[in-house]
Length: 111
Image (cartoon, rainbow, N blue to C red; front, side, top):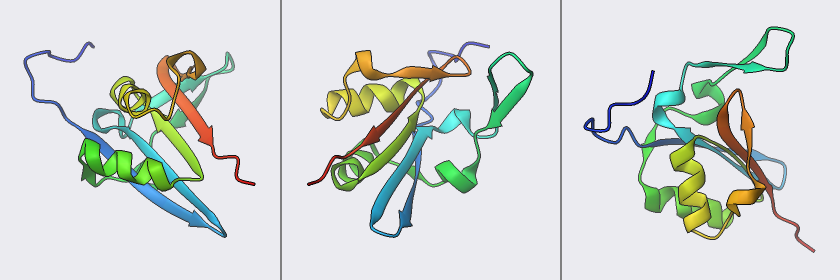
């Protein structure tokens, strides 16, 4: 079902995971939480969970602030990827799809 263009923007959700020296930002379009996305042809799915992506809604500015500090980012959803591209973190050609939803993973190469 397509989103209602007259409905208010549901925003973004984000969670920061700290794993050893990594600052991992997981963010998605808020309306994706709870969805099961098909993966491959074997009937497998991946659930978009608040345990990974969070459930706290964040502003575009807060998400961009977190992406500036991230060593790894996992981004899901058209609006989230568009914001990351507008912020210079992602080239639109570098994105793929997960279950038909725009998806990207970003890794900072520090050295």
